[in-house]
Length: 485
Ligand SMILES: [Fe+2]
Image 1 (cartoon, helix red, strand yellow):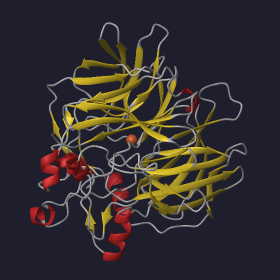
Image 2 (cartoon, protein in one colour):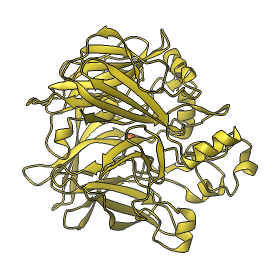
Image 3 (spheres, helix red, strand yellow):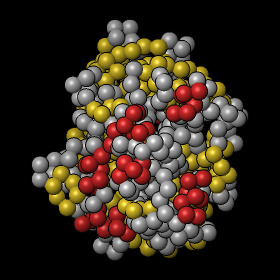
């Protein structure tokens, strides 16, 4: 298929190859519009803080060290602080002044000789953040969270919930996976305040492990489900009714290849699109339901809830295939196939009684990094905001800001030429009653000036309200959160 080179993408990648300086609560320059006086609080974002490690370009988007960026809004100005998550691996690579660790998508330079038998992978702590139970944690789905000091953003260390995230299975399992994975997409139940999360644990037997953390921060392993394969699962759905829903796709790690060092874990992933996706539902009483649907892979779910008729609704950003590591490496060089498939908004309805699954399209557009009004998690909702590509855009880049009405399929979009933007975090307006009465806070890279800005937009119509210039480019990152002021 024809591959096109995208200068905007390449300028962004080149501008963020190396580590950014760290800034201490500097005031950002307002370059457009005005800050809403009622927008008071803190935007925290996490992401890959650079694309190379001591001169070696990573092969995968997910491999840069985590860098947390904090933007404090007081209604009149925004101050900015950023800190790399100082994992043990970050500190060791800094001291050695070279790449020391294999990571999710990148083997060490030097081929098999350099990678054979190296089973310790870098915990990049780069994917998301959660504040819960008295802890601010930087998350990475392959291993332990890292605790951060909420004021200074200094790294306090690996965090295992008092040993709960240490592998409790046999010695071989502990050898393979000493630290239990804790996904980067935990969900806090809207009424109980309990945090639910999961990890897919490779070992002598593969397992899906479900965790619960009380509002006071006490964690436990709530369920352990056997897995037929080392499935790759990034996100899940928690409904207010207490159902936890997992899509176990035939996208799985070849654990032997990855651990032996033959390939990176990402490049070991095998995909069989001819096989169905298994949907596992853990009901509030612990009953496990297993349903099946045709192949599809979702990095992210938009939301999910139990409908009035008892069926479970799951809205996913669904890919028809899994993006292989060669495609991601080409992306990091600024290249994309013209017909690069992106994720589409699909609604699944799960009838647990009949064991039936149906699906329908929610809109004629493609998207990723979906956000919703935080008060609607696990419950009926109407809008999602994402990065994306409307049907009218000829380029296979998710370079627009999208708002999708999941009731009507109406798509609203905003785009500035030569720009790329981050996940838009939704900040409801205080006292608002309309779901889209609020703000979006997101980052935008402008290739024409090679600068990175923080934007505040109106969540209803996507109109830019304020734009502030960062003192240095930072990658757009993955996931963030809003703390009320
Ligand atoms: Fe994610």
